[in-house]
Structure formats: C-alpha cells, structure tokens
Amino acid sequence: MSKGVKIMILALTVVFSLVLVVNRSWAGDAAKGEKVFKANCMVCHGEKGDGNGPAAAPLTPKPRNFTSATEMKGIDDARLHKSIMEGRPNTAMVSFAKTLSANDIEDVIAYLKTLGGFGKMK
Ligand code: HEC
Image (cartoon, protein in one colour):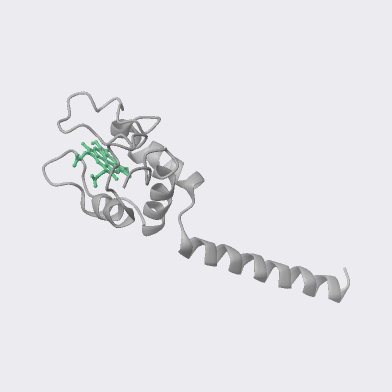
C-alpha cells in the first residue's frame, strides 16, 4: 500500500470517528435503545411498549403505554429523563440511574420516541 493511500485511510478513519462522537452527543441511538428496552423495561412496558408486559397486570398505576398519544400527553424530553433517572414515586417505576449508563438512557429514550405516542399531542 502506498503512503498516500495509508494517509487517506487514516484521515477517513479520523473523520468517521469524529462524526460518530458528535452524533452520540446529539441524540441516542434507537437501535441500541431497543436492546436496553428489551432487557430492562419490556417486562412491565410490554414488547411493543404498550404497557402490557408480563409483569404489568397486578400494577396500579399501570406501566405507561408509549404507543398512546393520550398517555404520553405532556411528556417531554426533560420528563422522560427525570422519570427514568429518578423513577416515579409510589409506583413500580423505579430509578434506573444506577442500573443504566447515561448512554443507555439516551438510547432507550430515542427508542421510546419511535413507539408512536411521543410528541403527538401537546
Ligand atoms: C417494574 C415495572 C417497570 C419497569 C421494569 C419499568 N417501568 Fe417504566 N413505568 C412503570 C409504571 C408502573 C409506570 C407508571 C408510573 C406513573 O403512572 O406515574 C411507568 C412509567 C414510565 C414512564 C412515564 C413516566 C412519566 O413521567 O409519567 C417512562 C418514561 C418509563 N416508565 C420508562 C421506563 C423505562 C425506559 C424503563 C426501562 C429502562 C422502564 N420504564 C421500566 C413500570 C415499570
């Protein structure tokens, strides 16, 4: 391989890594977030995020239905962060601040937003 080609490959690698780093700080990755969701949230919030997970039946209040604009009404980014970091008092929704990394939380939020209910009604 000529020196020129090696330098080109190196330069492209640097640019590509920078793009990845910048993207990361902007928004979570919904594809990774889906894995976080399946591992940590699905048991209550359900496979489709509709609040009907295997552990949901006995819970009051019910886990949030992320596919419903009505149930997601008024929930913005800040509220999603707060609820996931701190949990919801007196409900089965516990804090994930110690269980998940900051990146995992960004990713799972990006995934929740793909489920249909988020941001439809204000
Ligand atoms: C043990 C069951 C359970 C698990 C596991 C669980 N949740 Fe929840 N979640 C709930 C319940 C119950 C509510 C409803 C709380 C309420 O009505 O205030 C809720 C509500 C929420 C809300 C809406 C809170 C609000 O601000 O109104 C979000 C967002 C949420 N969960 C995200 C998650 C994420 C992300 C995970 C996985 C990392 C997760 N939950 C795991 C039970 C659970």
